[in-house]
Image (cartoon, rainbow, N blue to C red; front, side, top):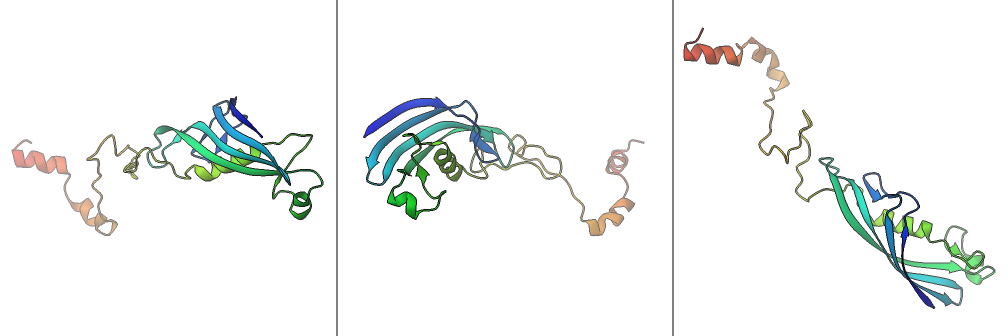
Amino acid sequence: MFEIHDTVDSPLRIGVELIAIAPGAPLDLDLRVESVSEGVLVTGTVEAPTAGECSRCLAPIQGRVQVGLTELFAYPDSATEATTEEDEVGHVVDQMVDLEQPIIDAVGLELPFSPVCSPDCPGLCPQCGVSLAAEPGHQHELIDPRWAKLAAMLPEQDESDAKQRGEQ
């Protein structure tokens, strides 16, 4: 048994569409590697910074993700290797184990599919795309389409205001 406490660069983008660990970001590994009867058991945590955008307002967001790993890598010609599907467990190849796919899988399960900058983020205005957080009272006067023809018969608001003030 031995322990690994190391920081390595992320070889690729790890995550989901809106939030992920960037390529080259530092992955903090805190792992324990031990030999068991059927293979090599790797347990521990991986922690890394994340970057992405809010799914409601598209503002950039930063964070951290920490995932736990528990992976068995089967020895060649072991009972575990003989009784499992090829993709079901990892394999020890040339006395090495590859942690890339287990880390990708664990991070993908941990990150939210729709990250938000804050739980009460109001998002964007559906009519014009303005951030509702930047303009709290933002709204549009919308006329019901069933009454739109009648609204077109009314005089313009600016003209009626000018008439009421006696200008014209």
